[in-house]
Length: 535
Image (cartoon, rainbow, N blue to C red; front, side, top):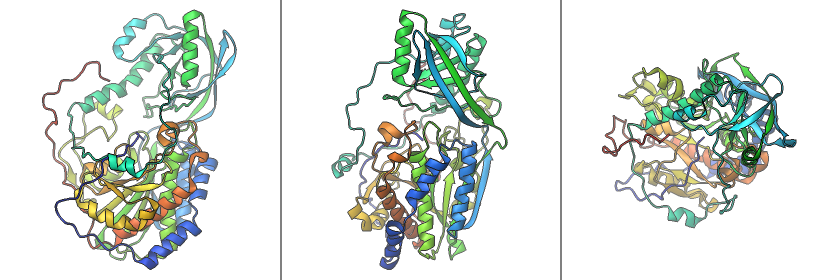
């Protein structure tokens, strides 16, 4: 997922909204006892991280996670446990990989294959050339110079000093300082600029292949030996031709310095595999049935997929475990909600919110089909908006959606996403958790995860504010996204709060207030010119 940021504290809305009474004290005591004294959230997180590990969409590990999570939901007595599929593309996984500098001296380099790039045919040894390639017009500068080379395609940059703490909890003062409402913005040219960026990965691969290069390497965008291996060419028919690796920033700079002085030779051994057994990805769904089938449902979700540099523990095994734990808590507490409570573990979030986009297309709204083949090939549903938006019969059924996807940090409150009508409701529902630091409601939207597309069509979808811990500075998408970076006490707190708010929403007299069904907006800046150098 893209990194979320803390947003502005909400101002009181001008129209009074009567909040539903919070969960009764006896049930709140049951929920708290289940979560704090009999909780299983950390065992769930440990299984996802340690036993299954990184869960690339459509990889064998993700298939194992799909099966295991369904089994856990069934073991807790949830109903209608099933998976819903959507077209994705190729599975891909790493068996083993290494990169070594063999000249001018032998040294192992910190590295990872770039996702969906092909394997080497055994160990591949070749000289390097530093050829920064950022735009299509850069290709002419390197024509005829790359044959037989491992091409280092990133411009080396200077080290970035760490000037802030790497592990951080938000203070009340941090929240109070952020008090600006951000107005919605619509840029008609954004999709075209995104298309240009997304197409470049394939254009670069094709250029390098045509020039006779044998592999390529890029520099990690993180410091301190962190690597991610993020890739984008997962669709059938768009598989890269050349092996690609990401090198730790410090190792990449060393290679670039040495290449200024004399020849440098690398050995790359990338033993990776494609899995084409099923091109569909699957969202996992389970329910606690409601007593009133006409009242609709409330829903909580987190993405089950991850990158594979680490074990997907914080991003987003933590959120998935809290969703599952809230389901277990409510089932074991014997709740009898008015509305059905639905739990969803999304697939394909890391490739562009694909699972939640598929759910929206299946259950909530339709849009006119995109006809541009390039946009269909390279853009995700989060980047494509066609008009008009037409509600499906199920559009009215969703009463509330809560998302968790910012690591394992303590929940501090909710982003109201510019929906001013929910502010007093959330403040009342969060009131019992003030002693846990979870009573903040902020107005601005937060992006980059699975509630976003629901908000765009006016549905009441919300993301929790969380303590960042070392999520943004160190863990996010990196090779240290492992169990050691999870905080069990915070996850127990989050599971109890989520379970309680779901029951609040399920038993509320009315669904949460919605935003308007969107129509084509006017450009926020009608006088904007596009920068041809902007990628």
